[in-house]
Image (cartoon, rainbow, N blue to C red; front, side, top):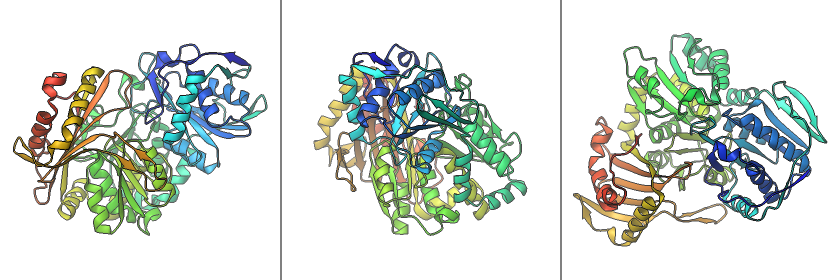
Length: 538
């Protein structure tokens, strides 16, 4: 069927696809317009093979049925979908690559809450398994502005609960175990025997799946394959509303795990993953590991895992992420790359073989095995390192800081800021940048200030206006960005960093107080948005 429609305002994909409130996606034509615009942008679906799956949040199953019928109507030859509509984002990326598919639709709003009154999202990943690059998302957006009809097969829903094959018109639908191929990939990367021996020797762990998509993967890999004790994985059943929680693996939203890890009953390691399984949190007994430090430690020790025994090609990080991984790259003689926020910017570097490991301060870490960040991969690499080094998480961190120095780091999120006020702050700050170098503010001397622009070393593309950064002469740095992953208002993010070569055991917020004062004064935050206390500190 060809259904008449008209453009719907506000369908411009962000760094992670299109995210809106669930009820918006449920409005007439809303999802269909965006999916058809995507087909139009990729020159139709005729003869193509696609992967489809999501994180199990509310509206996931209904949206998948719509996408399947639209794929059939657009001439798609075959669709591989996870059983029950479930696929973690890294597992979907792997299936695209494993099956030489033409791309895939991933349904998720990542770490945002789920439910009919919460958030939903959809994005298209390309042939390399990674998020659509900016030139494709621009084409998708352009197509949403001119759409006049969409195609939909007049067919019954496909049974997604039964593994096997089905026909939807001329299109083959294959329903697959969402874990099987991903688990095989992990077994090829890591020394499962060494990790299994470590668990058998009494090593203990708590993994909080946060009632999100990683639960089935963690049960199968950590408990069944690696022999971690039953009960190691908690909140392991994916729920449409994530158990009314916020599936964001950080000390705020994973507080029960943090409380356990800071108690006398703490296991050897705690870990968590987010809504769609691409983020991670690592915490040792009494020792929280920041995502920036985790990236650096994983890069410095990756050679202990079989897949990376021959060393790394290079390391990449997003601009707001601390420079800790740069120090590792320098010591190892590797290339290091600083990109805008958004995993899609790592894709070219990975495809070109310039880097092996990438990471973001927002708890995303990954490698060349897929083209997405991968929460469980990071957890398994930590386990492999612990099995080989036979030290605690805290001991590994202390050794790392003594070797490389410590990049004290914190992100302060100011949520639901009135968009006009947030834009005014950023505009006024941008106007100040050219004159800041050489000034002293709150006792801190500024050595450079600019608005980050990225020249892709692979394809020569330029991405401008990627955040404002201010560097100080004592190794401190402040970065300001407006987040592109929320669904209402604006989230203003202030990233604070202070390098210390020898003082490696201080409290992070204490070490960051001077650069924080300078950043607040420079930005006139109290005057412009009316607050200086963040909603979330990570």
